[in-house]
Length: 534
Image (cartoon, rainbow, N blue to C red; front, side, top):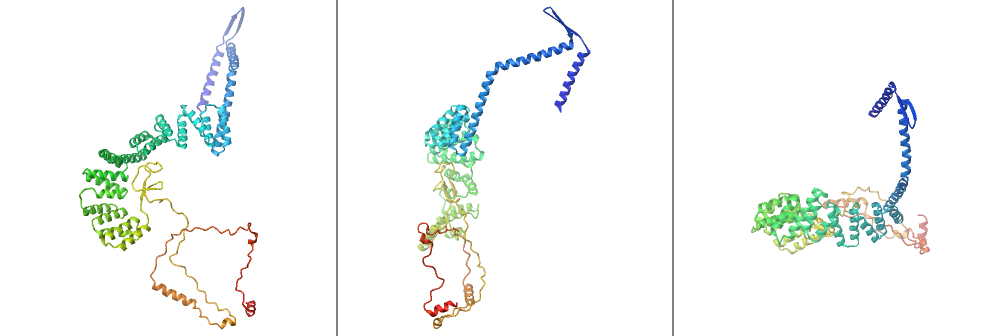
């Protein structure tokens, strides 16, 4: 709407100008080279305007002729660039589809049409990787790393190629160069961090973590820093105890649920005589993640305490989270040490119906210490061998007797306190048993068939009526105690059908040589005669 209004205002101004000139006529005289030309002011103005238009038209033609070589060259360059772009697009699509032939052909065409183009270099590298030509791929990535716009991409490719040929030195060097180029780059920072962790260089790992802090989530950064501080505190445990305690306390602040940090901080504070502060840290960690290491550190808060004092302390800790297996085990161990066998048995009583391996082994120790009953000890040890497993430190399918900061696959904070292979569940159907069998209708007994005379001569015991059998079974079931229904523990696995013998190998096996009979053959002529009337 505004444009329309402006257009109308412009037209009105132009029209007013023409009217103003028309209302004020005048004459214009031009004398040049002995010629004199006289005309009106309006005609002179129109002639000047026409002359300007003609001059502009002629100048545009002359300028087009002058610039025609450049325009022709620009046209061919644009056409070549479009062909290169189409070749790059076709090659990238072929790489995604896994068509190696089209990918290599498109890469060669793109290199010819668009040499030095970043996408052409990327296509050449990826097509070489698809074809298994590691040398060509590395050459393309190295060419990309020399350009400012594709340097990080080239370094990433060189890092992957170094890992594939298991050249850890080259991979480390490339990752460090990428970190210097851009410290917040995630893959480069993680590579440098993993390299320091593999070498147990926890100070260098902390420095690498600080460099990649901007690219990490706040919670992830706090967790990783806490793990690295705990690893450094454990490494300095016997060398610099003050530094070890400072690192452990910082780790507890960053991750209060990190069991190794809380246990180490509690032990070091107890050694320094700060039992109250150590108790607060261990209690807070116990409420978040009850663990035997925390219970062990809490039991030894004050050196020189009696076994009964430690038992009282363990009972206080277990009351923080009632109904926890770890609390019951801690109380039972402390009671066993204090020779309070009744307290130990009472603590483990809720778990004896389905004991774990630690519960059964602890019960065996209680039997051995209290009664020295070898039979009961063997019974509990046998139950421990068949009992369910307990949580352990596990990572990547590997079980460790203590916490480690790095998993066997080089993953930081990989070890978790859980059942080994707990994530491997069975989703197959199982056989389910009903609590009570359905009632089966009782059919009346059939009358016996007439037997041959030879068989009638031999007396046989009369079969017991079915109703009497049912009555007996009911009477027996009343005298027996009721049993619990069997739990479904057997996976329902469908066995493959037996294909039998291959008839193509032996055609004669298609026909059964001896046909199966439904009744035994008669022994004499009289029986054969009776068989005909049945």
